[in-house]
Amino acid sequence: MDPSSTGIQEPFDLIRLSLSERVYVKLRGDREVTGILHAYDGHMNLILSDVEETIMIVDVDAPLEERRAVKMAKRKMEMLFVRGDGVILVSPPSRT
Image (cartoon, rainbow, N blue to C red; front, side, top):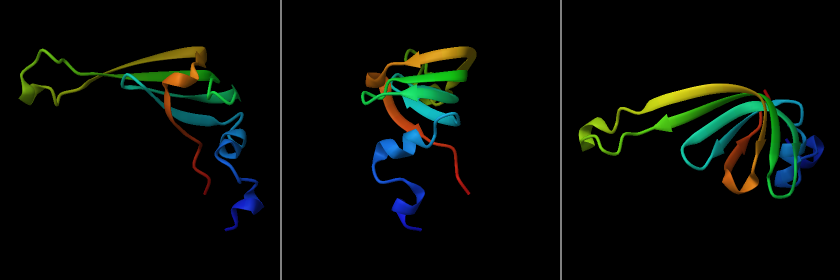
């Protein structure tokens, strides 16, 4: 499939086509969020709604063999502003 036929020619085009859809965002500090993308800018600041945040927690004081047991904390939020300098990856919804 030719990328120009889908309207995707630059990386931000993929984000633009994901507006009003649920996206996955990986953040610094072992955090991940999923939510409906409402707005973004060139710094990758994002505004999301219906957000679920997942935080991976590793006990660094535990013995090495027990550190593999990662705890996950989850929370939900109505709206979230994500600052772009913390964004590692934005994944649009799968299009089949």
